[in-house]
Image (tube, rainbow, N blue to C red; front, side, top):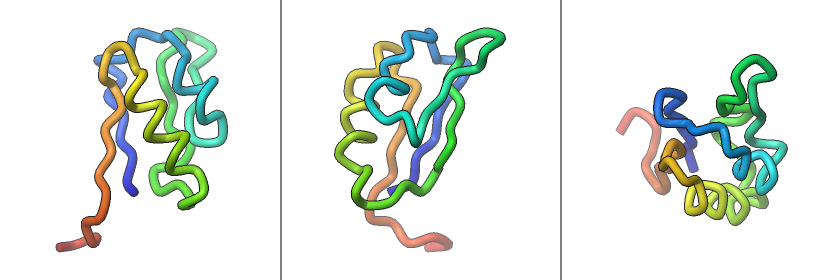
Length: 70
């Protein structure tokens, strides 16, 4: 799984941080999402999927099952 975030879409709700705190954080300055891991361990995939699904602004994108460089 590869995770990307769009800070321009982020509305600073913090749901991603509450759901997957080892993958997402928030900037102290403006509250925008900060991506801590763009390739999280498989054990974190359920939390990351939930974070993406509940993000009110759709700022989190997931790519699953594609080989790098393909």
